[in-house]
Length: 129
Figure (tube, rainbow, N blue to C red):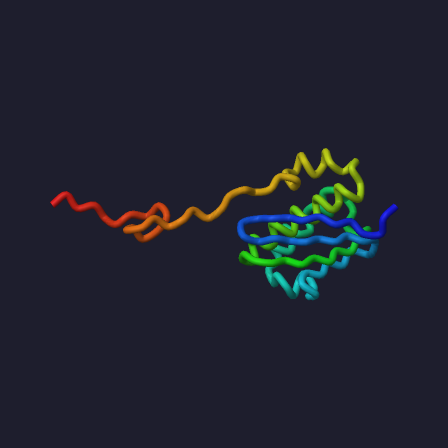
């Protein structure tokens, strides 16, 4: 059996490269502890959800490199990467992760701004006269 399991997760503009290896549940993102990196309990909860669902909290240490996007997108990318790496480590976890929706990449992207208008959907006020 392998020592480390690798997977990639993506969300919005963020890309997370995730390595899982046997340990006691320590999560490191860009060489910084998870709590210090994200700073918000909600984003931390999003990242830890795959471990909670599969009941593997203290079995793996996570080392991740996250690039691009904002904190929310990075947390989503990290969650997908962790879920895919868990699947590589144990294929029997697939039904649990699939049911929770953790194996599906969230394909929503920011819509581009249209020319002559203030935003992607927003329009200047229409004047008949």
